Length: 336
Length: 189
Ligand code: SF4
Ligand code: SF4
Image (cartoon, rainbow over all chains, first blue to last red; front, side, top):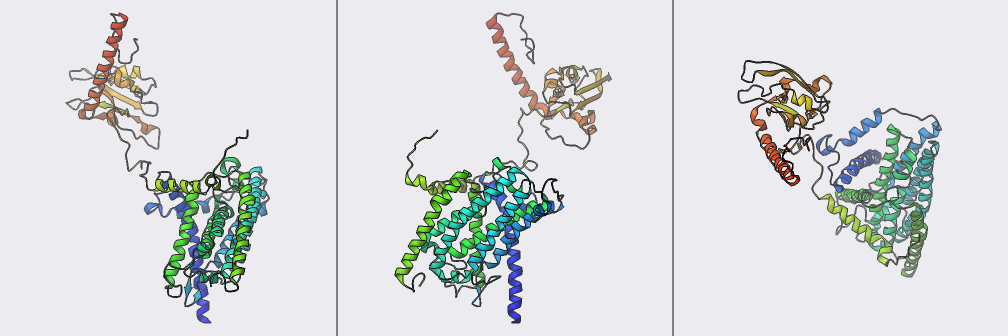
């Protein structure tokens, strides 16, 4: 009993630290990679290679004036950034990082982990809507509304693509889904679901090419136009953490999580497994940035068209076919 | 307006285009950086660089300027202030006070062209940062530079002048204007 408590506390501390440093690191990686893609240097003045830039940014944000515009709804205005950031942080708890002594390395080993991540993760959108609405600014409001419409449309395809994965793996527990992928990753069993998840994950995190909530040219920043200082930083922290979580989900649900190719999960040392999981997550984090600085933004109607006319039927068809195949293979289908 | 295209399936899928775009940006990540890291990597300068005007010291390490005031007169920005005085040297006159207000100077180079004594040159010094207005008004102490620094610039200017003169003579011959004289600023044209 004693040991498990210590272990839970340690996982929590390490997990939280990992999440925060990943999110902070992303703010640097985003700027660095965008610079490299544009043949620039990126931030390179603070510390070696600009590695301390997130620290400098943080200090700047903290010491900025907490300005509240006159016409906003003060309570909701102040609450919204927290509502955006906290659910994103909470979802990280269910991302498994491997197995230690047969026990999953995860902050909260929830038996409905996938559902939990989806349910709590969707709460983050309230922060964006409320932030946009309480700002009392038409552009912010539009940004918030767009974000909500977009998330509702894409959440369906996202969940449907995950249902197919769950059906194949036979569990809602993330660690069990990972364990079921020993030697045969879901990306090979469910390539279409993986593709749908990949596209919807960009929409869910409000990232390019689907960042309609921000949309600088039309909405001058969208929902966070009226925000400054640490509140603004919280919105961004939320976005980056959501990216970390989505990348983690992608790695865990489709790319075998802690599974190292050609090694049994049971035989893999825990640190190697965690490293594999981290590497996969990092790849998708880089993909987020890479895509952002490559693709132009969609038009809003194109986004809706893509969501409802392409991704939704595709994910439904994928689910139906998966179900059919599983039924034909009998109760021992899927990974067995 | 509605145009009718017929797109292939690959084009309508959009994903091949995405992959292609990603490949392009991936290639760019490994390209050499375009940005110059300015303070560490100085701006490249050539003899044609028209930096801040500086005064030349002659071979005897004395100012070559005879304080004739031509540069002061030529300066369109009224950046130059000269107080002349007498000297025992051969040239008889030298500047007692020679100030260029670098906050006024527009780096046009007219002073350099006006000077009959080749005493003022556009140097290759470009940086001018400071905290007060006063420190941008440069006196003799901060303007004078050794002779050698301007040797190349002088040759470059000479070449320029010769070329202009040739052009000018050719034009004069064409138009039959026998009284045409060369002027460095071209004002007599
Ligand atoms: S034109 Fe030349 S010689 Fe005359 S005052 Fe200016 S720098 Fe001195
Ligand atoms: S460069 Fe032009 S503006 Fe500057 S001091 Fe000489 S004549 Fe005046």
